[in-house]
Image 1 (cartoon, rainbow, N blue to C red):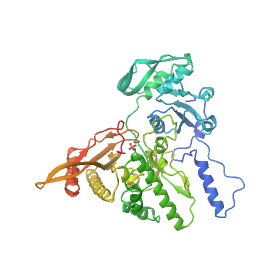
Image 2: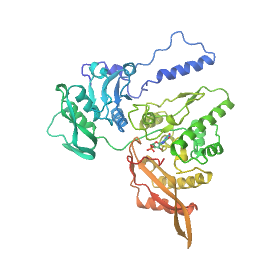
Image 3: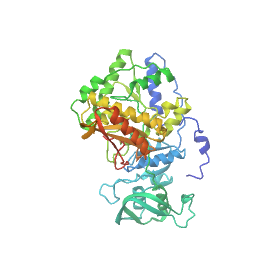
Image 4: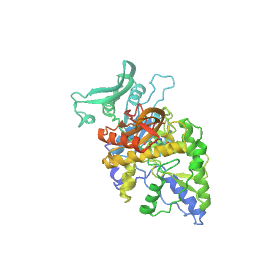
Amino acid sequence: MNETDTSQETRSPPSGRRVPTSDDLEVSTYLEIAREREGEQPLEKPPEAPPRPETIVILDFGSQYSMLIARRVRECNVYCELVPWDAPWERVRALNPRDFILSGGPASVYDRDAPLAPAYVFETGLPVLGICYGMQLLAHQLGGRVAPSQQREYGHALIRTGDTDSPLFAGLPMSFPVWMSHGDRVIDLADDLEAAEPARLVLEDVDERLADALALLLGVADAGQRVQDTFHRHLRIPLVFVDASDRFLERLAGVTDPEEKRTIVGETFIRVFEEEADKLGRFDFIAQGTTYPDVIESAAGSGAAAKIKTHHNVGGLPREMTFQLVEPLRYLFKDEVRRVGLALGLPEEMVFRQPFPGPGLAIRIIGEVTREKLEVLRSCDWIVMDEIKQAGLYRDLWQAFAILTDSRSVGVMGDFRTYGHVVALRAVTAEDAMTADWARLPYDVLARIAGRIVNEVPAVNRVVYDITSKPPGTIEWE
Ligand code: XMP
């Protein structure tokens, strides 16, 4: 960081105060428009925008792990934003950059259209940290040399820091395991680049676990009753509950493609929302609990990363809406949102509720979604939650839920042959849901869940446990 800068304390917001985001201006504009419509006169001089926090700007070159870099920086209570690698200077300058981090990415610096770091990265004179591809770029663009390795390295490796007193290694052991994923290596550093290599080593210690979103879209969703209770009891906010299941099911009839299901649910949700809002009067805005991982995973970022799913609230909404979208949590990670929730005095039960995907159970029923299958899955899911809560494991898990597979299997019950549904159980630990590991649930908890599902849900005769981490799997099956 810039050692000569002594004004940091006056510029950074004191902890506990809200950190303004780059959407603040947008939101205050929305509010102004709304007030004007209600007859309020606009202020002669608009109120001054809150001071911008200094930002570590992370240029995203398309690594699947770019978000983890942002996470680690935020965990140090330092504000950062992830922007596409080719973000124009105007956009970056508006963030009041303090340092740059160049992420990894799938390209090789010698590819024909390899993305390069923009000139401002070097011209501003701010400190730059390159990670993986970012580090190779620094070497390449500043006169060093990068070459393909004899051996491409993927997966676990051991880093030895050796005998160094560099502050970059302060507090790290002499050797530690890292997660490698690269084919090129730097063979010659440019003269000014001595610090880049150790920095890479430090940040390649990317932890595999991760996190996600606070979603409010219900779609073909979960227990509407529970959500209603929370609103009435805790928040005393009148909530209009609409059972639009017929409409969702009609639209989903015969559809088996996961992406198509996502789009249909997003679209139908908004249409129902518009119609219901119309009945109540005029509304200009729709507020949504999009969080930062949603934004990043929906590849609003670089376009350099491969798209895995039309993710989350962001991707699922139709382009044409009569509402303007307000997303106050857009720049916060899930754990940051939870801290905000607690600070606001929201009930813990609500704050620590496990995430539920926008497209709802539609992406947990493999194949076509029908009312019967929804009933089966809800019954299984209820048992999973009940047992997980009774075992005191709810808060330790990122998510635990059931999936209704499209397989059937033969079984025997009371001397009769059965041919029933196969249900999969998924329970994962994660920090941000970009990566996740399957939870080592105690055998007796697994046994109770499986026993109860097979006994209490007649259509199901077999339960399997998903032991795939993310990557290579994803948390949801679709
Ligand atoms: P995946 O399956 O991609 O999911 O590993 C990561 C996290 O995101 C949730 N998820 C969604 N949330 N809309 C959402 O609001 C979606 O379309 C969506 N898809 C996945 C998922 O439950 C997990 O927590």
